[in-house]
Image (cartoon, rainbow over all chains, first blue to last red; front, side, top):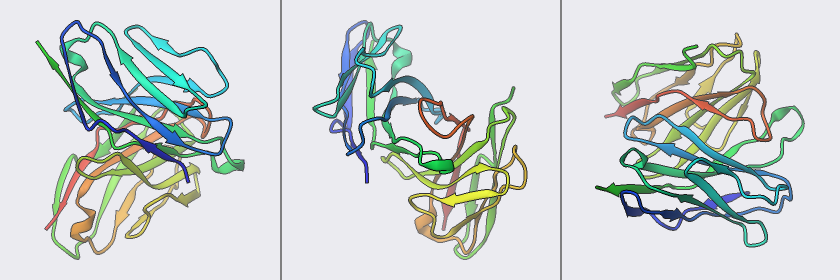
Amino acid sequence: AQTVTQSQPEMSVQEAETVTLSCTYDTSESDYYLFWYKQPPSRQMILVIRQEAYKQQNATENRFSVNFQKAAKSFSLKISDSQLGDAAMYFCAYRSPPKGSSGSRLTFGEGTQLTVNP
Amino acid sequence: NAGVTQTPKFRILKIGQSMTLQCTQDMNHNYMYWYRQDPGMGLKLIYYSVGAGITDKGEVPNGYNVSRSTTEDFPLRLELAAPSQTSVYFCASSLAGGGGNEQFFGPGTRLTVL
């Protein structure tokens, strides 16, 4: 079974600075997707960024980018120019390839609570 | 579009009571999911459905039942509530079941069993 590990329960960053959140995963698959979700205090789960394992280029969405190291099974999230609104719980998630008509499942890490200091 | 809606937002149950958590999506998505999130933890899959009439167990299905009679609705039934079921429950939907298809989440239901 796939596992996702986020080794940093809490992180903090100063407003306007850069922070990197770590994620590692375990899988025997070669094709899969990785995601970062943001959960603010409202509890709403919001997709931040996604990465396909076959794409070597790291995904970027505005101030959010990833460092995907397939051989190391590492998928870190970098937030540049941090803003107060970035404060939230961040979850890394893994999705295996679909199996027949049953689709595939998301496996989540335990999350990293990010605090942004003014 | 309202997206994924869940009712109720909060509920307190006594041990042994039953209840149904409602989930509706208006995006015509085929796939729907139920997750639970325990304090300080990530989400764990309870049940999922690949279309009307088809459901399957996820990682933590014990103590729950689901049905999918329409594309829009995917209710989660708790029978004989136990304190271990105290959690936040999220419903989600996606157009397809694999690849990079985004799962859209509802706002969650906070359930306490006393």
